[in-house]
Image (cartoon, rainbow, N blue to C red; front, side):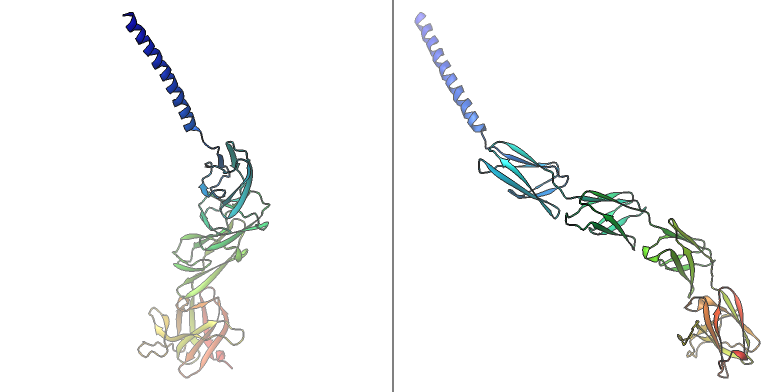
Length: 359
C-alpha cells in the first residue's frame, strides 16, 4: 500500500513539472504573437476634411486619424495633404517607436454672415447659397489678393462686397439692401416696368430691392393700358416709398377748324425732326369716347368729328411714354393741324383752329 502511494506522489510531481513547462511555452508564444512594428499615427486637427497625399494616400475626416508604419528605423517623414485646392506639408522625425503627429495647418477662411433679410447666392469667389440670418464659410488660397471681392445676388439683383484680407480668418457681414416700397393709388391696375416687371392691383403695395447701379435717384415706371408713366423718388439709407397717383388723363379735342376731322395722331414731343406718328382713324367707342383704328381697314366703322364738336380720347389707348406730346388731327379736305410739345399730366382740353395748320 505504501508503495502504491509513493508511485502516485511521484506521478503527481512529474505532471506538475510538465504543466509548468507548458504554461511557460504558452506564455512565450502569446508574447510573441502580440509583438508588432511601431506605428506613426496621423491625426487631423485642421478643422476640415483632408486628403493625405504622402507618405500614404487616405481621406481623413476632421478629428479622425490614420495609422502608417514607416519602413526605416530612423528617418524624417514628410506628411503632405490637401484641404480643398490648397496643399500643405508637415515634418516629423521617426525613431522606430510609436508616435503621433497632429496636422493643424489649414488655409484661412472667410465667413459670410447673411444679415440682408433675404437668401443670397454667392457667385464669386465661390458658388454657394446662404439662408436668411445664416452664415457660410469658404477657404481662401494663400495667394489671394488682399482686396477680397465677394459677388452675390438677391433675386435678380447683383451686389458686391469688398474686404481687406490679411491672410488670416476673416468675417464679412452682408447688410440689408435698401428697398423701394411702391404703393398703387392710381385707381387702376398697373404693370410695373422699372425697377421690376410685375402687375400691381389698385391699392396694393410691393417692396423691391434696389440695385446699387440705380444710385440715389429712383425711377418707377409703370403702364396703365398702353400709356407709360413715371414717378421719381430719392433713396436714403433705409430705402424709399413711392406712391403712384398718376393715371392716364382724358384728352378732349375740340374741332374748331371749320372742317370735319377723320383721323387723330400723337407722338412724343420732338425737338428736331422726330419719330413717326402713332394714331389712326377715329372709331366711335360710345359715350363720346373714341379709339383709333387702322387707316387702311375699310371694315371699321369710322367716326368723324364735325367742326364745332369734340371728342374725348383716353390716353391709355395709345402706346407712348412721357408727358409731352405732339398732337395732330387730319381733315377730310387733306389739311393737317398740329399742336407741338403739349404737356399732359391731367385731364385737359385742346382746341384746334385754322392757326394750327403747319406753315
